[in-house]
Amino acid sequence: EWAAVKNSESIAALEGFLHRHPAGEHIEDARRRITWLEDKDALGRATTMDALKVFRTRTPFADLKREALLRLKTMEDDICWQTALRRQRYTDFLDYLDRFGEDGAHVEEARQKIAALQAEEEKQTRTGQEEAERRANDARLRQETEDRRQKEAAAEKQRRQQLAQKKKETGIK
Image 1 (tube, helix red, strand yellow):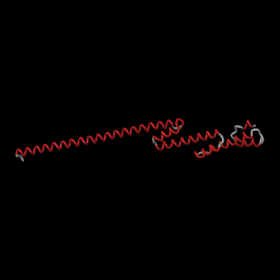
Image 2 (cartoon, rainbow, N blue to C red):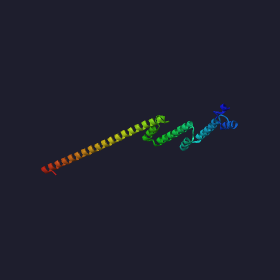
Image 3 (cartoon, rainbow, N blue to C red):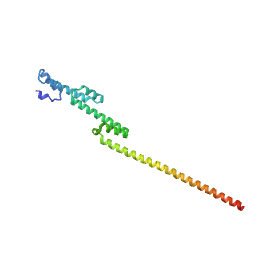
Image 4 (tube, one colour):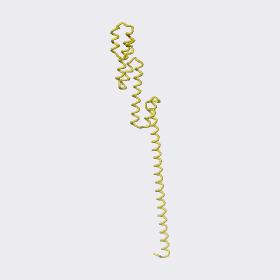
């Protein structure tokens, strides 16, 4: 009868087996299976990182500990990814890649975001440089215009002085 219930997902079926075979050869196997099913159920109810961490310290079953660890890593991955998406900063996407490497659920997306942010930064740098060059060119043109105006004003003043001098010398008013 043990063969019929040893892989059962029903605690009731296993408890029925224990009730029918209280001194049987597979009592410890049945109890262990019941404990495993209870722990599996508890793992299913663990929905927070703290609950999963506590679960990992309490269960004796390595397979359930591994499953809890995988769920923890998935939660951490999601939190880190959502943070990077919310902030949209180059350093947050790099942090995501550093923390999760090739195992992260969003590795390719993170690389694409980094490339896009780098391209945008380069564009802004170019735009900033172009703007600085435009401003410098505008300032140079303004200075050249002012210099030309001053030269023309100086030349006009000199011409008027020369004309006044000639009038004075010739006695023309």
